[in-house]
Structure formats: C-alpha cells, structure tokens
Image (cartoon, rainbow, N blue to C red; front, top):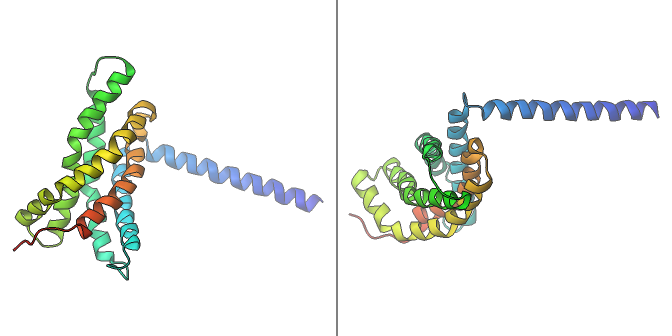
Length: 200
C-alpha cells in the first residue's frame, strides 16, 4: 500500500542518515586532530569495562560490583592511553628494513619488550590508588611479574602479528584496545585475585 511504501522509504532514509552520521563521527574521532583524545577515552572505557567483567566472573569474591575498584582501573587510561598512542607512532617512525614479514616481526619484538612497562602502569598504578604506597606497589608488581609475563606471551604476539600486518596505523590503538579488553580482564584478575606474598 502507499502508506507501507512511504514508511519503508522513511525507514531506509533514517537508517542511511544514522549510518552517515556515525561514519562522520568516527572519521572525526579518528582524525589526527582528535586521535589522542579518542585513544585515551577508549582505553579508559575498556580498562573499566574489563574490571567490571572480571568482577562478574569472580562473583565469589565480588557478590556486588565494586565500582570504586572499576573507577580506579578506568582512571589509569589517562596514563595508559597516551603511552599506547605515542608508542605506536614511535614504532611506525622507525625505518625497519627487510621483507614485510621481517618488519612485522621486528615490530613485535620491540612491542614485546615494551609490554612489561604497560602492565607496570596498571599494577603499580592501582596499588598506589589503593593507598599501598609506591614501594609496596612495586613489590607487588615484581611478585606477580611471572604471571603477567605468561599472560603477555600467550596473548600479545599472535595478536600483534595481525595488528602490524593488516591493521591501518590510525586504527592500531583501537584494535589493541579490543585485545586489551581480554588482556585487562586477565590482568585485573592477577591484580585482585592472584596469590601474593604478605606485605607488611
């Protein structure tokens, strides 16, 4: 009927308008002008989300969601986001030589070396925000380092092969944030549930 046809046309136009606005928004958000802000925002959001998910998985310890803990995790994006942003820009600026795959594996090598510094921001940063003080937070990080390195090595190398081989430069922090959502769930579990030594 004519009414049905008009409704169908209106629905299609509305859908196209929404998609067009979303494309413009994403294009602006991931433009050079706003990329740093976008990376900080997405990093903070995913850190907080990862902690909430981790708490949901571990309901025996967290019968209800500890939003203060999630906010602490989220706040670290202010440091973690810029670190990731400038680190990937730095890696792209290095004139690696060799075949495309040799270049990919060289980048992965350097990225793997940097991974402990990123996990240190989370573990030490959270320790300080919890009021433990820098010395105790650093001791906690080194006590949990082997568990963190096991998580790093099992997740990041294969993820970074795909990242450096196929993902455009301006989307690499976004891609890594998606992988980081999984990584941070594990990191949050190690931080809040892994057996640690008695610190006095």
